Length: 221
Image 1 (cartoon, one colour):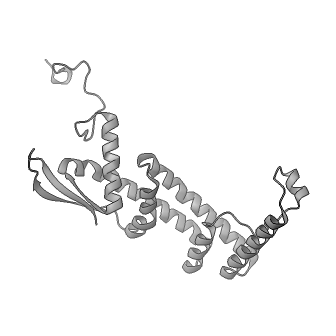
Image 2 (tube, one colour):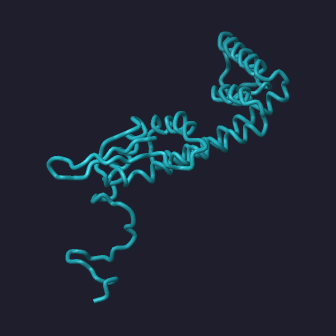
Image 3 (tube, one colour):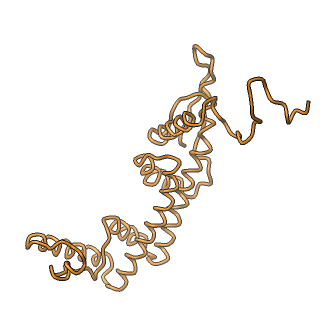
C-alpha cells in the first residue's frame, strides 16, 4: 500500500495539519502548557523542563520578543521623526503615558457640559480639574516651551503609543498575561534592540530520574 495513504490501526483520518511539536497532548492542554512555560521563562529569565518542551517553546518565545522589539523600534522611530532630541522624546513619551492631554483643554461650564451629555461639576470638582490642567500644561511646556511644537510632539508621542499598542495586542493573543507582556516591552525589548534573534539558550542537564527524560534549562541570554 502507498505509504502516503497508510492509516494506522485505530486511526480513522489521514494525518493532516499536524506540523510542529505536539508534545503528545491534545490541543487545549498543549496550548496551556506552552503558555505556562513561555510565561515562566519570560518572568524568571530561565526555567528547567524537558529538552523537548524547551525546544517546543523556543521559536515562539523568540518570535514574541521580536514583535516587541519591532513595535518599540517603530514607535521610537516615529517619535524621533518629530523630536530629534532623545532626552526630550523620552520625557514627552513619559508625559503622554499619563493620559490624554492638549494645551487646548479647558474646564467647560456646566451648561456646556450639559450640551455634551456630561455630568455637572461641583465647585470642588471644577477646582480639581483646573489645577490638574494647569499642572499638566506646566509639565509639558517645561519640556518644550513653544506651544505649537509641544502639541506636535505630544501628538507624535500618542501615535507612537498606538504603534506599540498594536504590537502589544498581537503578543497578548498568543500570551494573554499582562504582567509578562509588560516585562517583554519594558525590559526585554530594550535589551534586545539591535540583536537579530537568538534571545534564548538551551543547556542540556542530563537524564531525569524516574522516566529517564532528557532535561534542559532554557534561559534568556
